[in-house]
Length: 252
Image: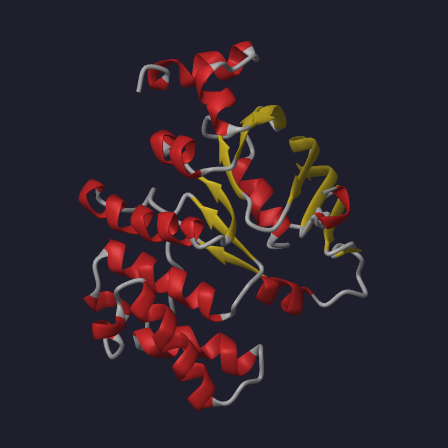
């Protein structure tokens, strides 16, 4: 019945987003909306603006124009607290960005204690929960240099999850990994998708994007050239540039 339908409120709304570096415009009038439970993959050739878009959403880069609305509030407004926003919209980087002088456990608790201002016992309980989830609980005393690339990325995911964010951003999370380690990280992300985690994933893993996403965005030269359900984007793309980019995947 209509009265029983819950109207979903967006978590993130990107409106007319632009980003220039000097005279070079990297992002041109980007618009899209993220709802709870969405798994949005962003695909496209290198240099199309994918990572810059993610860095703007996390305010690691300051957009030149437009708005990023988080629960209806423009987070680019200077009066808003970016640190608190980042606690709600976490990010996993392609190069892990772990603290090399800290143990695995400390990497995952520092944000909880320093940003969320929770006590150490609570922080360790939360961190252990997520380290167990990603299969890294046996390594809590290890330093990052003792871990493989896949293990480091799983710790980085646990660290981001430990902040209990509303949205997780992944910037090509497997691009720095040896091929045999890619699967273990994708399996973790796939399990998060199955549990309903809201995610935006910049990736070159086309089969993964096709199979796990609820929504796919194809970027080309700083614009969203095409967007829609993965079944449509991967099977019947309408934009000639999308067709060209995906041509080698169409028969998978």
